[in-house]
Length: 537
Ligand code: HEM
Image 1 (cartoon, rainbow, N blue to C red):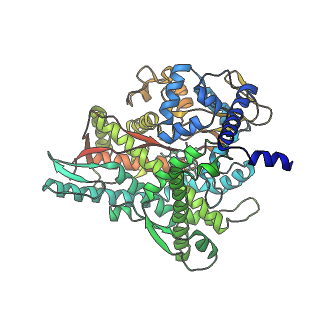
Image 2: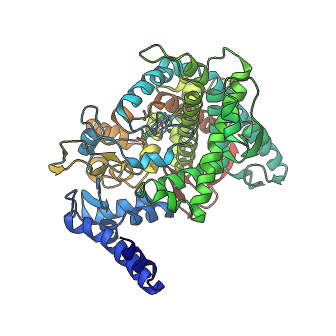
Image 3: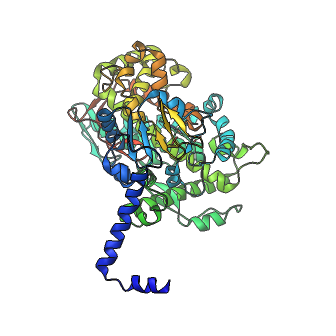
């Protein structure tokens, strides 16, 4: 043995390099030849067949949904996107891959999203998920969500006050930097609405999940308190003192974290410790730490308040599992963090994309405003109530059409085939294969949505086969891991969009440009510059 070691250590550098290259080639070619998941016959890029690096690279570029969509357009229903991963673009596959009872689990992709400890979103264990979901699901029941309405409406009012203030200044020829730069021109206030929707969504979820808003709407800035030392903050659990904090841009941190985790998560787990050393991934890893620091700082502050306020954290504290046990503080912090991540930029990016499409389609905007004026015309309060807008058909169609076309959650959410394998759309996949259905692609399926599937046209929601539409429309995913916050998300979108579209008229600043997006785990607009005119006094 020692002579083999002696011979190897005595090799020249060139021979070492040759050995490393040979080992890398072998590691990639053996699975291609032996085809343990029987996926080689599916079409897809050659690089994706031999290495996970292809999908990792595509994810890091920020347009995974579009790239996978093009592959489906070229190759059809089944596309191999990694050595053990097949993307299936068929609405029927949703019922099999994501349904209750078929035994699929979240893949190792979700390990890249863990911080503090596994939360409802990233736990891969079925019993652990069932336990958490039982505690959390009643918090998001329709009845419970209505208790959150006053907080939601209060922050929407704040956003409108800020826009009104800037509008009045703009009409006097003012301009400034608040948000991302604004100015008055041609009787309109011109600004990027994306940061404002982010301030709004973060303040709402901050208020609900941590007992106080981040104060972004007041400050007109992206800044959240972060615990400086996690270890120190964590070790003070049970004590009344709060951790030392500093301020970081939370929206930026969340974007960095999403891009990092979505790219790291598609790489094999044993590569990840090495990949994390690369500069781009190091920055993402820092974002994961800082995001955890936000939850630690906010939960510590909230618990020190000793209030009986009816919010998400209060309800999480009251929740008990089957044995009657409440969550410990670390789990509580991890779940509050889950809600911050899952419930903030999902709502803001969806609201932003929907507003973009309304500004780009003046006739649709006009029709929506007519419906809003008829339903709310006499009400002096500029912020609608859920009761007023929950059954406005055109508003609902506009929101659904925006969620369909933009697909905030657009990538195929990866699920692991269980023991015994799984048959999907007539094809058998053995245990260990990763399968996913890309929402972005099925949201553009012309057999379901018609030949104008790429257009923003809410009218289609009244025309097309409702059963096919409901089976294919997948913004909140499907089955046991579907969005637990769906009721809250729907309430927020209804109130935000009805209030804002009733009060303002929107046009695009650059109508010739499409909506530029960047995708990590979510598809996010990069910016959305519009001209706002106030419709009501
Ligand atoms: C428009 C807004 C929203 C969209 C499009 C959306 C979409 C989704 C999707 C697609 C999933 C499945 C993720 C996966 O399987 O990897 C999910 C899960 C989840 N969402 Fe949402 N969501 C939204 C708003 C919210 C809100 C407001 C909350 C709560 C504050 C929330 C909390 C969660 C949680 C905790 C999960 C994990 C559920 C589990 O695994 O049991 N979401 N969401």
